[in-house]
Length: 220
Image 1 (tube, helix red, strand yellow):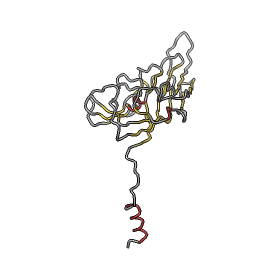
Image 2 (cartoon, rainbow, N blue to C red):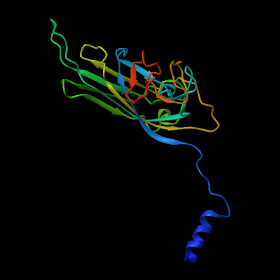
Image 3 (cartoon, rainbow, N blue to C red):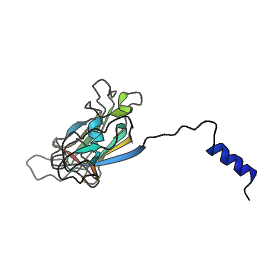
Image 4 (tube, rainbow, N blue to C red):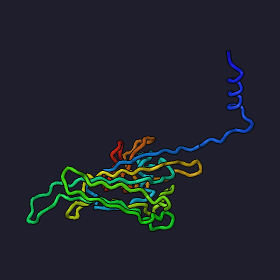
């Protein structure tokens, strides 16, 4: 038998005097992981457009749209390991250095200049750096798709050459908006299956030429 207490609770929750507010948008925390490739130059800047291009939906075989409309960076983690060097006349230390900097020199994405670096002098212990934006900076806020740099990442060896195979984790919060039309990805793709979701590189380039490819699949 249904109790009076149960009936009152049901009526209070489901037949209120005024309807409660609800959130009509998707917002999720996510960690993107990228691996530097042979195209990596040792360092590059990342924009909100780059981050939103990292997860997209194919419209046709050659057109794609960002899955989310806004992104907020929580922190960036870079890990790299020194590679064995070929014998040379000069002594070579197995050293590598990684770094993160919140540059944000353009209005609307001021990063506060926070930066950190770390080095390793070992073949089996990676250099690791983890850094979030200044909480009071614009780099810590939600950003729409745009071309202003939020942060820079770097990974070089003892000779100053780019480290291929460095791991970059970007911790973000993503959300969409019903009033914003999805933005097309900045660089055209090919061979996509309409309706499928894909992961893109951290610099916004296609898989064949990106400096840091996604560790997730499918990639494009």
